[in-house]
Image (tube, rainbow, N blue to C red; front, side, top):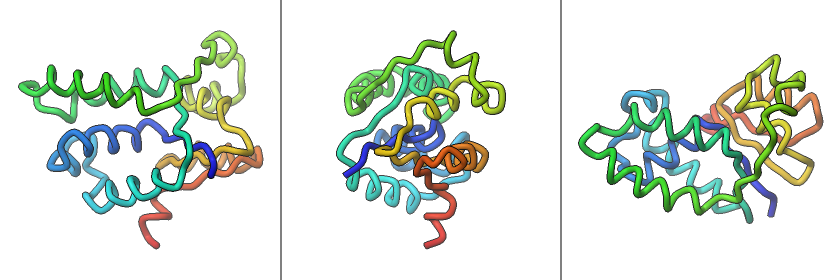
Length: 150
C-alpha cells in the first residue's frame, strides 16, 4: 500500500462529510455529491498512510468555515482537532517552497504537495493543473473527476 496525499478540496470533502454528510453538496462543496464522499472514503481504505502539510491543513481550516453553519463552528473545530490526528503531517519550509517552479505556477499549498509527493505516493486531486505537473515529474497522481466517471 502506498501513502496518499489529498488536495485541499478533497480533504475538505472528507472533513466536512465525516462531520455531517448533509453538508456535502452545499457551499464550497457544491461540486461534490454524497457518492463522491463514499468513493473518497473507499479510496482512503486502500492507503497505508495519509500525508499532508500544514499548508493544506491551514487552507482546509479556512475553507471549512464556509461549509459549516456558524452555529456549529465550535463543535466542528473540536472535530477538526481530532481529524488532523488521522494524518502524518510533514512540515516544509515556506521559504524553500517559494523558490520552486511549482510555487510560481500553482501557489504555496500545491507547491507543498508537489514537494511532498514521491514515487511511493499517490496524490489525489480535483485540480488538473496540479495533476499535470505531477505527471510530468513521474509522480502517480489521479484526477478525482476521472475516478467519479468509472
